[in-house]
Length: 340
Ligand code: DAH
Image (cartoon, rainbow, N blue to C red):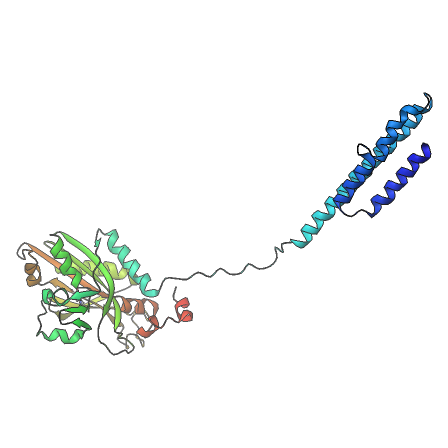
């Protein structure tokens, strides 16, 4: 019996040394420690031994069983560790690899100027109005005091869809739609693209962007207009900005003015953008013509108003020091990236 036990133990040791996988270990367990396993059978045979042999052999057999159990346990740990190590080696994360840069786009410079201006006017209680890109001749011209034979139409040579329908040449059409819908007090702002048959050059493009402002109330004066212009242009272009109102003509305002501002590129010293004048032209404005008010059912004796038409492309050119409007529409990603 003793010899048998020793043979079993050395057999187990030999087999276990060659085991690589867990299922082999499982078979080994069954072979020796299973219900009919070699060790279990010997344990059952103990009863056939004599009374003084039984405890001695029993003790040896128990030790053998414990040793086999221990060997299996150690082998299990060894295999588990090996599997874990293999996993760690294969799924290793190199935390020193630099992270790939995450590319995000940025808003187009014209959109940035547009949003800033909208925020400014919204914070001052102006209501946002949405106009139409395709307008009727009436809203675009007629109601703004520009009848069919008016020479001002030449300056806004237009894309007509049919004799009465046109791609809007300015956002001023929204003034009329607003006055039709609501009575004073009116404080509205509207922005979008406008279209004109213009030859493309450094400062002209057949599509560009405008932002329209209209205020109608009792006792609105040119002082209100000038104060608002100073506020908004300083907000947009910096506190040092000075403004200059030049008398001008628009059929829908009287008096009318064009507004020049300190050149943002050279701060007034003179450069290519301002053609060495230190100022650049930014917008048109004026006091709403009484005829325009009356046509929309607003009593021009009681009410007065001002209107402003910002050229957003010009403002963006000024703000970012760009002297060619085409840059905005060529979608050159490298140039757009520089304008944050
Ligand atoms: N609509 C004019 C244009 O496109 C700009 C303009 C001038 C708008 C005076 C106004 C204004 O609201 O009062 O040339």
